[in-house]
Picture 1 (cartoon, rainbow, N blue to C red):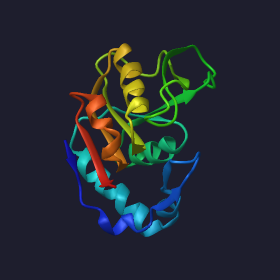
Picture 2 (picture 1 turned 45 degrees about the vertical axis):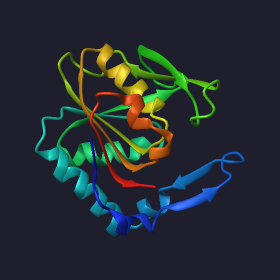
Picture 3 (picture 1 turned 90 degrees about the vertical axis):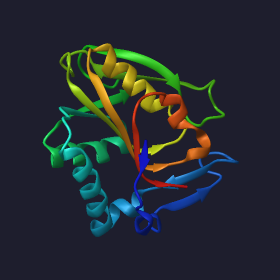
Picture 4 (picture 1 turned 120 degrees about the horizontal axis):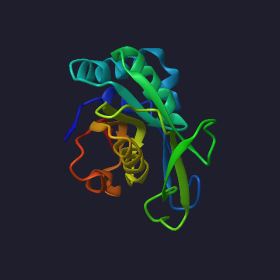
Length: 181
């Protein structure tokens, strides 16, 4: 369980109050991604941490998770496995349902899916997403990966919102994040 100090990158995170609905604060990482220097530094920090570990695949949920996960997978020499919403994968898939949206919105359910042949048994998997909030999406990714016989070595995020208790929901899964709010 760790969080690295990346406070210089936090200045590029845009805070948007009352989005997507009143009472919700959205943390927009697109300005950080648009800054080649800081996005590169962030990816280097992740790569340093995970290049020494046995990671066969990076598993990331759509949509922003794809950008972070694919970039990291390329840097550490791992395969990339997408987790998609609403049956948008073209091949036979396994599915899991989880709360959509925010911690207080647990009655709004989404379905996440992964190709049934995406991960071989025993594969070492790293879950990567942009933000750890309530943890429901990361938990769904873990459930999909482990149902195929893979081992989740860690879950990694660029930004964590501790007040939403995502780490708690992920239980014994090791969690790493660059920044917290």
